[in-house]
Structures are given as structure tokens and as C-alpha cells.
Image (cartoon, rainbow, N blue to C red; front, top):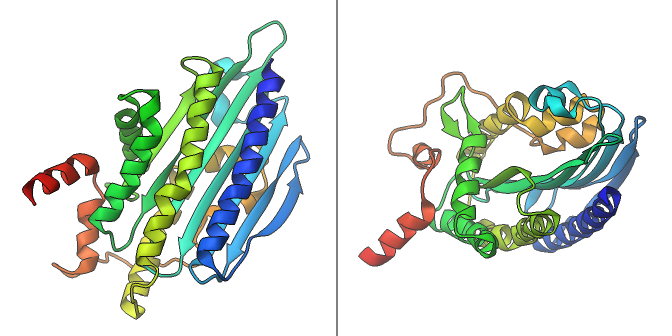
Amino acid sequence: MAHEHLDDVKRYLLDLQDRLCAGLAAADGRASFKEDSWEREEGGGGRSRVIEHGAVFEKGGVNFSHVFGEKLPPSATAARPELAGRSFHAVGVSWVLHPENPHVPTSHGNVRFFIAEKAGESPVWWFGGGFDLTPYYPVFDDAVHWHQVAKSACDPFGEEVYPRYKAWCDEYFYLKHRDETRGVGGLFFDDLNEGGFDDCFAFQRAVGDSFLDAYLPIVERRRKDSWGERERDFQLYRRGRYVEFNLVWDRGTLFGLQSGGRTESILMSMPPLARWKYAFTPEAGSREARLHEYLVPRDWLAEAAVRQREA
């Protein structure tokens, strides 16, 4: 039964990778994705697709991977000691988009499935994933749109689902050493196996299928906003925070590196350029300073409802 489920998930993820690449390349309008297939010596492999130097995307990637083996890496068994001694399969699609225009937000998402097996025992499995948005020059209406699409994806599965996974995203994508969120959040879920395989798989598909609806309208709204050296400098500075999160806090990066995944694909999420400035503080009242209002957990949809009533 376990491998039947695995095959179903794998087919969906390969198709999702195709659809994401097609939609993002069409939105870019100039560049296309280049594919690089790879194999993992211990078992498995994947296909990495990267877009560069586009009309919108300075760098982006949509990666599929399926890795398996007889032994889990320390990062997995430390958190879940019951997995020790089990063979495993981990399959997923992850994507990161770094636009060139500082007014177009960076965005990340992934959907994944994990299963661990041991003779004579029931398999242990779960789904995980989500997506989040990292603007540099944020616009309130963009954050509201992003979260409205996220909520619409969650609503068929219960009214408590969006608030739960929205809060989990705010908590997970938090840079503790900077005391700020990575951006305006979105959805994050992990260890999902409540309600049976079919319901969990349906939720994963709802999240994966909703990403383009959430992101592409924001790309279209912001891609023609003018920018210059000042905006570019601030974007590169803020991209440094993205690097810090991925290398210091992200569990997926750690799992990928410890499980013998392909380093080039794992670090695909890094921006092509980033910058660090010592003790930099934006000018008070500037557009750059305004970003900090967005780097705290906020109930975007409730705020939008209040603004609408007051209008």
C-alpha cells in the first residue's frame, strides 16, 4: 500500500513541476527553464529546473527530487527517534523565485511526502509543504491577495486550517537572531497525516495548485514599477536575510545536505546576488523603513476587512 501511495504522489509532483515551470516561464516572457537531471548514489535522484536572466526572474528554480535509502540522516532521527532503523522515501517539489525588480517579491514554496518503513511494522508517513512571500517594498493589497488565495485553498478542509497553518508559517519563517519574520508569511504545514491518506493528499494538491494564482497576479502588478540603484541596493541587503534563514534555520536544507542530496539543487534557493551591511538602519520614514511594519505576524485578512468597513 505504501508504494502505491508513493507512486500517486510522485506522479502529481512531476506534473506540478511541469505546470509551475510553464506558468512562470509564460509570466517571464523572455527566459525559459533549463533542466538538469541528477542521480543520488545512495538511492534516488531528481530533475532540477532553473530560469535565469529573464525579463522578470533574475534567478528561479523548480526542483523535483525523490531520495530513498536504508538509513535516515541525523537531522531526521534526532527529531523523530521512532524513525531509527527504518528505510525511507522522501519525494517533493520545491521552488524559489528571485525577481530582478525590487518591487516584485521573492517567493518560495514546496510540497513533499515522506514515508518510512520497517518489516513487521506499519509505515510512518506524512505530508508537508506551504508557500511564503518575501517583499522588499511591500504593498498591503498584495499581502491580502496572497493570504486570500491561501485561505481559499484551505477552506474546503475546515475553517480552522488556514489560521493554523498561517500561524505555523509565521512561526517557522522567523529569524530569531534578527527578531523578524522572513516576509509576510503564507502557509506552512508538516507531519500531516490526520484524517487518512486521501484527505491529506488532497490538501497537499490544493496548496500546490494554488501557488500560481497567489503569486502571478502580484508579479503582474509590480513588474513595471520603476527602480534604480537605491532600490537595488536595498533588495540585495534584504536578500542577505534570505540567505541567513536558509543556512541557519531551514530544516529542509539541513535534511537535504545530511541525506546526501545534490548540493547544487539544495542551494538553488539562494539568490544570485546578496549584500551585507554592518549595522544598517534605513532612514526614518523612508520606503525602506516601512518594510519593518510587515516583518511581524499580522492578520492580513482581518485588517483588510476593517479597512473595507472604514472606507
